[in-house]
Structures are given as structure tokens and as C-alpha cells.
Length: 222
Length: 400
Image (cartoon, rainbow over all chains, first blue to last red; front, side, top):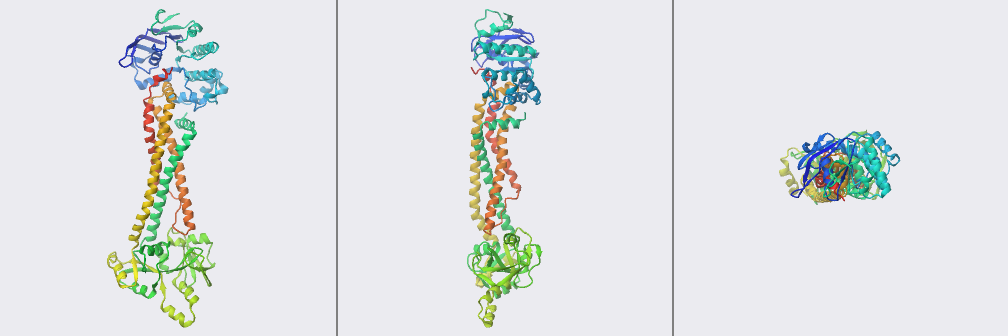
């Protein structure tokens, strides 16, 4: 569940970015659209409690983030948010399995090798657990990063430009996997993208247009 | 996963840098450990051998040489002094104890010292086997001598002329081993002890032409030097001057000479210690640079950790853990290296029949080695860790 009202953020003394209101029920998909630099990343940072809004409200997974202290924000993010970054950021020093175990460590969760195995298994990655990220194909690496995002069963998954460097087939497969995985774990999925193919592949998704083109209306199913 | 396991993986993801830093840090810590071990053991050995000896009397010459030859047995003596003069001094009211020592021969590089039972008693040495000598030509060997030559009670051996070994062998005068001393950690360990009369007998009988000549020699009997303990410390004021001005002998105070010696040797240990400190500083800088680069390279990795819910302190802690892990390994290697080197030098010195030195002891000061290693690590990791703490996670989202 994600709900925002009058959400705005100001970088230093710069202009304030005002975001359209959204109301996404738990388990739904939200597309964050807009050109580069429009504020999609800022919205993601606000939704992940990395930034505090300068005005307005944002509620994610039942938590009012405007009122959350910084340290509590880290603990909340560990529990509630799974993050799939554009550049994946898998650690080259660690194996695939250890990259997932690292997520448990970072979140302060107990070691759970079984959960790591199950999560990798669910994404068809069981045989790759001992490989280094550099020994994976682009698609495999993205699936590992997704597995890391899903590991702690978050209520919200934030995906940043997941199709940016993929060809049409791979982009479609990635989006399908992403939405299926989110649905299976009952998580709300947010995809920040400027890629037109995403909206086409996910016709049921709600759309939040950030930036100049505001013709479609915010938070409405397309 | 444990923080140590993660730090270890990160550290060894750059094996060359990690091993070089490990080596630098370990070298610094090893040299400091080595200096501590050597200087402490040297001080201890000197103290142990000097204990209770207030003044040494011998032939005129270098005072330092007299002390080194008479107390530590690591230099040649300055000459001999007449027995009659020594007997006179023994009656002096300021003298509590006088131990005569006659040098001149050796057995396989170990000195044969003619003396009295008081010499053994002075160091409180215990017999491991057998008994003390009761008549001339019986000998008691020190622990190190027994170990090095295999001599045991009942064995006989011949002394050879000179202190270095390889001199003329006194083939007609065998010594019989009557006892072996237990290790005392003092100079007696590397001496062959016998009655003063043995030394006279070996040399007089060897050179006397006839009975009359023998008599003449007996009248001119000599010892090499005498170790003296005062009755009262006040004697130090008048006694040495009395010896130096009224006799043909010289009196040397070991305390004074050893202070002088340690001051000279001290320059060496200071240089070595300074060298160790410079190595440590270099190691610290090198670790700092490595960590700084690692944090810069892994900025995204670390930001990802924050994104995954790790608080800033945890991320900074990871950087610190890397440095501390490196320091822990370097400490182990450094201590091992320092002790190994001390052991090696000790073995070499033992072969030279010189000062006792071992790598197999643990000094309380050595607890400073891990502390030093950790200190360097923390200093080196401070800035990188702060950088990791202040990492702006939103850069992860803007890396387009």
C-alpha cells in the first residue's frame, strides 16, 4: 500500500518538486513515468525513507514516513522495502549466495541459508549460487538482484529502470518475472521508468506521471 | 553472515593490496617485537650476571674489557694479577666476599674458569647431576656446555690453551666431570668450572723444568681477576681508589661500565625501534590509502547496504572491521616474526658462546603489539569509515 498527498521535496535552495498524489492498494503495480531528471529517483528515495519530504504526506506499507526518525527508517526499510537498482550493484567480492546473505546481514536479520536457497530456487538460480556476479549473463545478474530484493519478503518492491539496457524480448521477460514475483509475494511493485515498453507490457498498472506531461492524470488506472 | 566473514571477503577481493599491507604492518610489528625481546633479555642477562658484584679487580687496562671478560665472559681478560695481592685484599675489612677467577683455557669454545665454590653459590646455581669439585682436575660444567658438548658426570676431557678454542691441547692433564649444573639463566651456563688449583697445575706442570722451578712458580702464582662484594655500599667511595692508586691492579665498577655499554648499545636499539616505528607509520598510511580507495570503489556496494537497511554505523563498522582484521593478522605474523628472529639470533649467539637470547618467552610489554596494530588500523580506517558513514545513498538512485 502506498498513499501520498501533497508530497513535495526541495533540494537545498532549489525549486521544489511537487509530486502528484497516489493511492496504490497492496499488491498493485505503479508505474512512475517521466523524463530523466524529472524527479523519479527523488520519489523513490522518499518512498524508501532515504529522504524526508519537505511538504505533504507519504504512507508506505502502513508506515507514515514523514514522521519516521532516521535510524528507525533504516530498520523499516530493511523490513518493508525490496530494492532493484538499475545498475544491480551486486558485490563482486562475494558469490551470488553471499550477496543474498549480505542482505540479511545488512537488515540485521538472522542468517537463514534456507531462505537464500529457496529464493534463488524460485527464480531458477539455484545452480548459480556459487558463481561470482561477473560470471553471470546480464539477465541472470538482474534475476539475482531481484532475488536479493525479494529475500526478506518486503511489502513494497522499488524497481529503478529495470528495462533500461535490455532488448525487447529480455525487457518483456524481465517485466513479467518482476510482476509475477511481486504478485506471488503479495508485494506492491513500483517501477520507475522512462521506457514506453513498460506501460505496454503492464496494461493493468497504475501510472504516476512525474514532470511536465501531466495529461493522463495521476494515480488513475490507464 | 558475520561482519568478520564479510570483511574478510572484501579484504581478499583485492589480494595484492591486502597482502602488501599485511606484510608492511607485520614487518613493523615484528621489528618492534624483536627490539623489545632483545633489549629486555640483554638487560635481564646483564642484571642477573651483575647481581651482587660491586667491583672487579684485575690487571690494568680497559675497565670495560675487565668487566666483559670477568663478569660476562665475552671478552679476553686484561692480564693476570698476583695471588698474594688478591689474598691481601681478601683481608681488607671493606670486602665481604671475594671470588677469584682464573682464565686461560677453553673446551670447544667454552671457557674453563678456575675458581672457588663461592662462584657457584653466588649465582645460586643448583647441580643437575653429580657434585661440586672436591680436588683439582675435577670440573663442573654449565647447562649449556653439557648440552653443547655432551659432557656428563664421569667423562674426561682436555682443555686447550686460549679462550677461542683451537689452541694447544693440554694433553697430559685430563679433567674429569664431577657435576653438571642445572640451567640458571646466568653466565655459569656457558662455563666449565674447576678449582683454581687445576689451572695452576695444568700450566705449571706443563712448563716447569724441574722441582725447583716448580717451587719458584708456586711462589708467583696468579689469578686473572677477582669479583668482590662490599660489606657496606660506603666502600664504593674509597675502595676502588685505594686499589687503583696503591696497587699495580685496577678496580672497575660493573654498574658504571654496564651503564656506559648499554648507552652505546642503546643507540642501536633506538635506531631499530625508530625503524620499526617508521615501518608502522608507512603501513598505516598504506592501509589508509587502500581503505580510502576501497571505500571509493565500493561506494555503490556500501550504498546498497544502506539501501538494504544497514544503519550508517554498520557500514562504517564494516570498513573498520576490515582494517582491524588486517591488523589482527599482521599482529599474529609480526609476533611470530619477531620471536622467530630473536630465536634465530639467539641460536647464532649461542653458537658464538655469547649472550643468552631466546625467542621462546613472552614479555608483558608484548601486549602492546596487538594494541599498536589495532591503533594503527583504527587511525588508518578513521577517515574511510567516516566517509562510509556519511555516504549519500540517493547517489545510488541517480547513477544514470
